Amino acid sequence: MRIQRAGAALAAAGVLVGSLAACGGDKTYSSVADKVADGATIVVGTKWDQPSLGLKKGAEPEGFDVDVAKAVLKEMNGGKDVKVEWKESASSNREPFLENGTVDIIFATYSITEARKQKVTFGGPYVVAHQDVMVRGDDAAITKPQDLTGKRICKAAGSNSYKRITDPPPDGQLDLDATTVDAANYSECVQKLQGSNLDAVTTDDLILAGFAKQAQAAGGNFKVLGQPFTDEKYGIGLKKGDTKTCEAVNAAVAKVWSSGTMKTLLDKWFGGIQGLKLSAEAPKAEGCA
Image 1 (cartoon, rainbow, N blue to C red):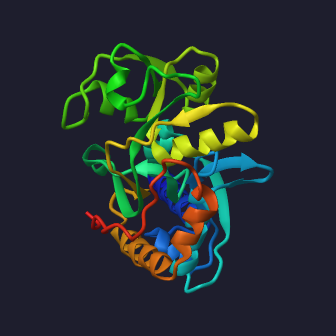
Image 2 (image 1 turned 180 degrees about the vertical axis):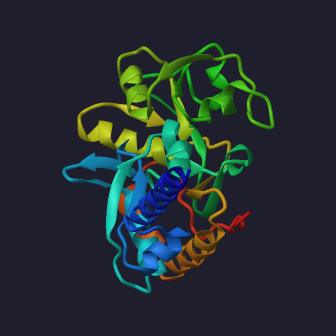
């Protein structure tokens, strides 16, 4: 019996040692704000397939969301640059990536919605986009969103934009009888539009403007109708409950706007695009619920 007790004691000690060894690995943080303050590398989720917003070119992505992420993190770090690891975060995996810790924070055309607030704590918004419609340049049949009745529109995985066309309020907007065509992401939507497998792509005007600009540079021809019909508040995604970072993010976003940096970034990536109405002032923060 004494031998059995000794074995049990040793086994318990082994469990304790294993636990201590695990704690001695990578440092853990209670919030992303603490991680920034400690000088750790921050894993930032962005899109990698959206021109002018988040597009992978070379070792890192580039675009408006990428620059906003750098500016906000820098403000959070007292004006000092933050070490960043970039992680592709498609619309379909943003919530899982935050929940399982694959990323610390997301800047990825992430519209704040009541449904998403159940899973994500949002900082911001940092800018307000508006849903619009993009068609081929020679298409004269679609001149306004209401013309999408009976047309083929893209349904990008993880995005709610198609619902604004096909569903009634509160999730939808126009409640039109349009046909949806599945795609993995918006770059695939644009490929399908180019190949005449779609009649229109409808999503945020900033996303559409980036694709239209890219197509024009490559000799393609798309046009954005310039008839926005929603407000899409771009939020900064955080793991549910990380209110400390949310408050720090909101303070940083306010500084990025007041310093003129946000206007500079908007003009850099979207200036001069016909029909596009850019935000002129900081949107009101949603609060850190």
